[in-house]
Amino acid sequence: MNLVVHSNPENLEAEILVVGLSRHPENTKGWQEFSERFNGKLEEWTKELSFDMKSLITYPTLSGSIPRVLFVGLNDRKKLTEDDLRAAFGQAGKELMKKKIKNAAVYLDSFQNDGIDAENAAYLAAEGITLGAYRFDDYKTSSNEADNTIETLSIISEEEAEEVEASAFIGQVFGQSVNEARTLVNMPGNLLTATALADYAKELGDSYGFETDIMGKAELEELGMGAILAVNQGSVEEPRLIVLKYKATESFEKPLALVGKGITFDTGGYSLKPKDGIVGMKGDMGGAAAVLGAMKVIGELKPEKNVIAVIASTDNMVSGNAFKPDDVITSLSGKTIEILNTDAEGRLVLADSVTYAKQLGATHIVDVATLTGGVIVALGKDKTGALTNDEAFFETFMEAALETGEFVWRLPLTESDKKRIRKSDVADLNNSPGRDGHMIFGGGFVGEFAEETPWIHLDIAGTSDAGSAHDLGPKGGTGVMVRTLAMLVERMAEEQ
Ligand code: BES
Ligand code: ZN
Ligand code: ZN
Image: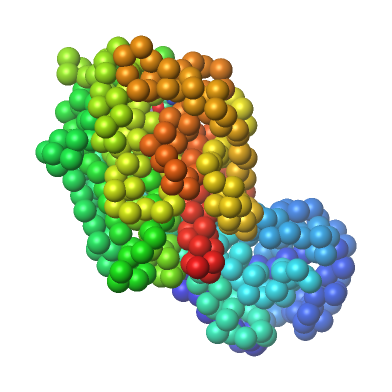
């Protein structure tokens, strides 16, 4: 999507103009000139139009170079928040796709208020429209009638064009990166194998000049990554450990590690999932997708912060070779683990990934994973669950989450929880202490490997996949946490 800022809309060619419609639209800068395009009809029409948040209606213009206007309801513009505006632009993006618009313009002033300036609004317009316009190229053999690409988004604003355009560009980068993560989540396990995911990561790394290291089974054996290997044991597919390094400084001090769960399909293994619970488990690499999406933002925007991405990828299968309950395995850290449930596989691959991130010198770690059904029971499908061992780090993280509008809620991790994770007759840890509050056990298990390193765990089992269409996109992969992880890196870059 090309982004262009125009200060004078006079001769601007576009198929449709997107306009925010709030109560008292006449207070909008330039509204007088704008309304002239309707030969005096606009006042009459706006009386009938709905100002309801996110309502959409299209009207023809009667003069000027843009033939149609898409009014987007904003209710009381004074009270408009950034989250409202992102959602409104998401709806607009969907509508532009439905109408097969290739060339749209946005009347930016109509989306601003005292708290949301032109740069802000341009950022949210590009991000929201990019997210709302997302569609997954499915595998239907009949041609997809609904196909469309928005080629140009013209932003009409009298503010500093360069700054407005730069903000819009950042918004678009965030949106596109989320969309790529969504596609990874939506791809089925037979097509997105660990090898395919690693190939994608390698390509991403090469295109942004990251140092990439992709390891297969032999290397994992050599390193002693017993936990990842145990999960992969039943598979005919090779595992992959994907490492990307973004070097903001040559010396590569104090990198932040982003660690993602990359289970390309989770059958549960011998602790087999029921037939209803197994459908959808192609999305069990949502954490990996979030990390790769964030790395794309980082590659584009090049913040002053060193970052390592570590992703362990495999499927979790059943076979004569598969690991079993009662098995005892040795992780990369040297800690031994008693397997009580082979369906608690995510924490195992994360354990070795976190240890490896520490070996690479990470001073801060965020792991992100579709880890437990427990987080859905606790928080529902629209809130990401978090655990941490470091208040200050978590505070920075929450500021980033607040900025992106991605809802995160922290759960406690107490000494008695840790005791239950460490309870085993035969090993240092067990991988499934029980069902009561088990989101905490899942994340807490990963925390055993972070040890004293400042660490945040994000359980996106509920938020990674949407059961139905929402303001910012369709049913399916959401790309949740791409934006917040990238924003966290931006914030940490500013802090140091
Ligand atoms: N991949 C699942 C978690 C999951 C559940 C993701 C629903 C998305 C939607 C994970 O590997 C798992 O099976 N967790 C178990 C843990 C239990 C065995 C301790 C769970 O949550 O039931
Ligand atoms: Zn599982
Ligand atoms: Zn899983």
